Length: 371
Image 1 (spheres, rainbow, N blue to C red):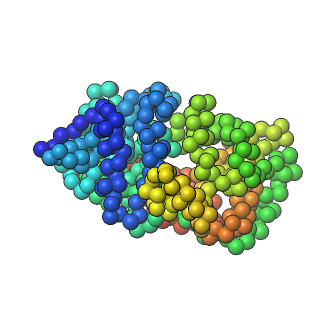
Image 2 (image 1 turned 180 degrees about the vertical axis):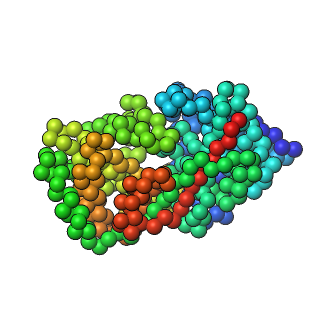
């Protein structure tokens, strides 16, 4: 007997959160989430996004065993800003069982339709800061933080439910050049002549005054990024609390103008996937030690976020930061750089990455269906 149950208590939420590690038990490239983050992500009292979203959490049970999960989201803030009328499904996991998959998707479809939505898209979470899309290419490649590592049957089954492609995201791997390209040296000198200054860091406490200016710039510049929802001040502080403890300040570069206003930034961190895998996503009692150890042994830099003020693009600020980041990457002995996910339509960024020899090694797909 198959039944779909809405998550209503902590016991069911625990089953929801820990189901993926059962499904992916023999999946060598899957990466555990940080479970301390998961408990915050799905807690309406701690995750501010619940304040402007309607949500639904559900699990599937078959003969008494939990065999699938799904989340439904209606992000009213995003819909209002973008004049959209879409619901979302996300954090979906099942074994290769079309019946279970169908019932879970149908459950969210009915829920979204009853709330007046005209379309369902996904996998897509509260915003683009959550893992997005089903993996459609690159199943044999390792996973980095905040990306989805779905099994091949997931994309096939969503298509069998009548969903079609909405958008793809690609992920690049770049071999770290031994020397910064000479053209970078020349271009990076131009902004300095106009009063722009590069700021680098050695300690986390130095980052605190820049948190809101950096995320405020993100709000201003990410308007064309699909699914982006602007940070509120509270969400900026929450975001910082979540990531500051694991960031290496040496891989954060900020540019300010002559008035000391933040106009560009880039954030990266040494890959910690091996440590998360060894810790199985648990920070305690000793998981955090394994994660910090893996950061020190890592040979890859993972890029996380970056932005340049709209009216200051194409004057060399991005090159100025890239030169500094490549220098830090070489000093640390990191052999490669991961671009994180990039919209396939973001031709400018893709061209910049490909100039450095970046190769696409993963592709993720967001699907859509009219309700």
